[in-house]
Length: 167
Image (cartoon, rainbow, N blue to C red; front, side, top):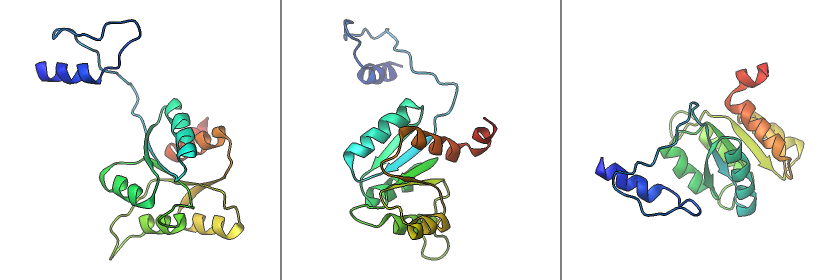
């Protein structure tokens, strides 16, 4: 218990006006949640847009991973369970549609088959791109700039379509 107590002491954020010196027997309560948080992977090369999306999603009760490149996103997907993905199509190292095709592919030569919902967030708004994204399995398409309410609504519907259809 002493080790856990030490770890909890290091992880606890200081409280304004409170002493940050803890005694070994002072227990810092761990957060309790009655609901399981959903994990969203934001794949967006613009830090400002990523930060905006991160803040909105965390405020709405989601946990978030972030990737600025397709390479980073592949690494995150290989080692984590993701409930939904927001995907920019203009990534610096790979086109977003190619990334979507790669994560949706199955069978021989496939290194990763992802089945979670994918929401496209892009400045590209032509009909062909929208149709290709839909054929590759995107569940929603948001044209930038988009309203934060549209992002949250799309993610909510993607991760829990049955519950959100009833509301």
